[in-house]
Length: 211
Image (cartoon, rainbow, N blue to C red):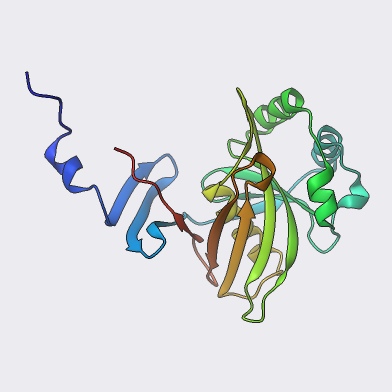
C-alpha cells in the first residue's frame, strides 16, 4: 500500500501564498512569503474591540501576579482587548517590573476561565520609540495550561496590543510596533505589528514549515 498523501488541494496550498481560515470569529487571511529571513507570515484580524477591566477583576489579577498597583504605568490604563481572543493588557513602568514578577498559575487559570479570557494575559513594558516612529515593546504572555506557563510568541496578543494602543490614543495610525517576547522562557521572538487608522490589526513574523 502506498504511503498516505494529503488531498491534492492541500498539497497545492503548501508554500508561499494566501490562505483563508474559517474561524469562530470570521475568516482570517494568512499571507506567507519567502524572504532573506526565511518564510514570513502575516495575518490581519477581525474588527477589534477594547473595553474596561473592572476594579475588582484588576485587583484580583494584580494579586495573582504579585504586582502592586504602583507598578503599573499610569499612561496606559489596564484594559482588555479583543481581536479574535480576549487579552487583558497590563503595562508596567519599568523593565525591572516586567522581569521581577512571578504568578500563581493555578489561580490565574481559574480567573481566566471565569472571565472568558481564551487568549493570554499580556504584561508589557514600553521600551521607547525609534527615530522612525516605531514603538518598541517587550511583553510576557501568561498562559497557564498544562506544563506551559508563558507563551514565547503570541500573534493574537500582539494584535490585541496594537488595537489597545490605538483605542487609548497612545499611537497615531498608521503606526508600527515591534514586540519582543519569549526572553523569560528562553525563546526570544520578535513580532511586527501594523496599526491602521481603522479595522483589523496586521501581525507579521517568521514562520516554520510543518511537514
